[in-house]
Image (tube, rainbow, N blue to C red; front, side, top):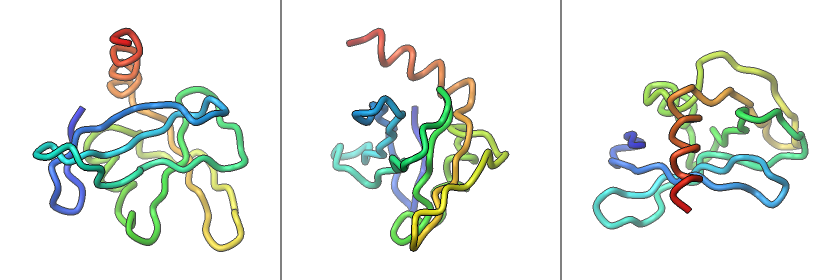
Length: 107
């Protein structure tokens, strides 16, 4: 699955955090270097198919980029305050959920 973020053409890599939450990283399509980590693993345990998105500091604009690339759905599910920032949670799109299944089956 591909998308553009801050001028980089990226390939998305999916994984899991230790507690089972979905992790998404963006890697440059040219040299495979990591461009950004899109998700953040907060204290909240979201339901399957819901992810916390890091949309602050160097990741500002990540939510809009993920929505434009049809990675996440547009509707904000909830916000988790964390002290200095708030983690926004969004549902993964059906296309992304299918991509994650394909990724899991390749292992």
